[in-house]
Image (cartoon, rainbow, N blue to C red; front, side, top):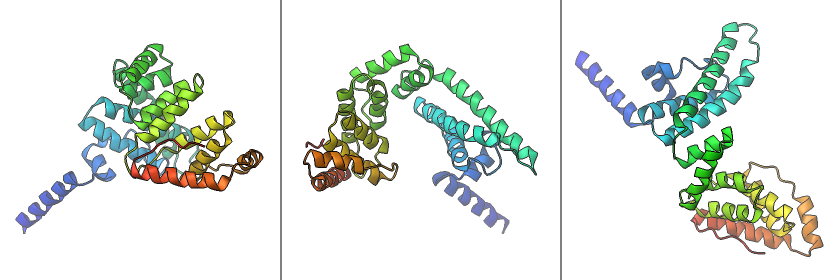
Length: 264
């Protein structure tokens, strides 16, 4: 019986290591990844993502994992900063653990930022430019563009954050290119749709703006007001139903991983 229990324990540990680790398993295995964060129900999702990424970065301390850990610490920090200001009437220690978590986030963001300041990883180059306004990181990031090292939707969006106030046409091209880089059945960043809606609106290209507004609305991430655009379309004698058909066609293209920019 004792041998049987030992065997079952080994099997269960093996299954846990081969399958998806749970938050509880990670905290039991590496308590130091959890005990310096809040221990109540606030910021549950951000806390979970952070702990799992801390575990992954400790297991494989790559630039990619450090970048994701920085982002997760920022999300957690923003959430727990608000929660830390909430006075817990009955359990004052709950309030203090939120403050401990917030201070941990500030300390770790600073540590990771210092650890990655010399990295040539494009994500980290963008991070140090966007967070710290480092011109040297920006120049290296733009050089990475010239070297075709930013060929992912996320990095194209990072480029747009630089060019949007400098070159609208290039920004639109980058957003189109970002969509072309998605594989079939993608989970598209809805910010791409929203940005295209806004940029075409500023160009007074209301047909294109309406087209992308439809996709932004369909993404569920934005509550887009379409009525004003419809008025502009009617004034230009453009059929908004045909633009809806074009939007459906664009969506079908994206599902196939074969996007091409629509023309009106």
